[in-house]
Length: 344
Length: 98
Image (tube, rainbow over all chains, first blue to last red):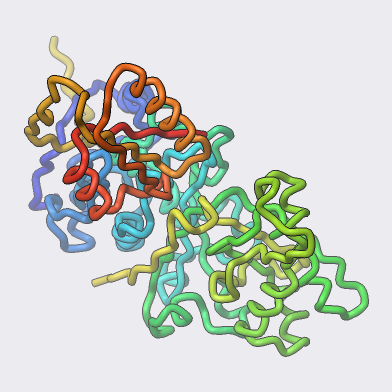
């Protein structure tokens, strides 16, 4: 039993079913049953990380909500996490509380962003996280429950309840859970956390305010890796122009063609950036650019710069498909944030 | 016979932290005052404020108008802009267009 008595309000029920139903009735679930959090289970999470429940992880200033380690643990238990996952949850919460992430707006906007978590480093193998087949799909406990824990924190602690403060017009399937690991062993490139200044021995989570992914199927039947660029370019057209940040997820089979072409990560970003240019009038046609705001011959890029394109490798061995994940507000209103995952 | 409680569970929610704050003093008249118009950066937000200015100008004589646009509806108003409006204006109207 943990030495830390909980400070959260406690409620008593005669049986488990009543407790589960209670969280539905108080609108503290995502629509699926939760694991009722007890003082004992929450205490195990606090003990695992060796932190005080009263410690403040961050604040959401617009709604004046403070996220403590204890409230994070309660929601992580509810999501079905194991205590071993808790360091990832804590790092992700610290990341979404950074001002540049703009948590309030990113979680209530009509455009409907979800929070994509990308985990890198040794912890991926320690926690048996999925970076392979069906990486965005169900089936892996760590991926599913870590992502779910962040959503429950956003709803229960910062108050972004769908239909109340969260006014997303269509919503987002990733609002149930959206957490992947990068397939570092499949990538010829530096993994994300190394690209962003850490070492390969450090574990990290990067949070992206992502809109729904756009799938691209590449028809690579004649050893033309350029067709990958063309497919990604078409996908990026949908979200352009001028995206400050955009994520492109490439599968191992796709990356095999990239590897054969000998493109470095930097080169690929530059090639994607260059390819994803269109006449501005095409965006006028789709309403992305106001009529009269573009000249006849003007070309614009779907991305604002090559540096704003994040390339990730993940997914199953078979399949030349890519996902393009545009960021909410064009990447201008909210930026991705990386945090180290600290374990004891 | 009383049934023993079997499940004691915890509240996952957080109430907003609150601080005491006083309302700004209300002007007794708008006549002679400086009107601030702060658009939030959404489409039509400036047009809405211009319309409000036009309607108010039928009834009141302003000594000046400060019209600004904070540029990004999804970000808080920059502090220097807030301070400028507070310093120069007697009343400020803000708008959200779309």
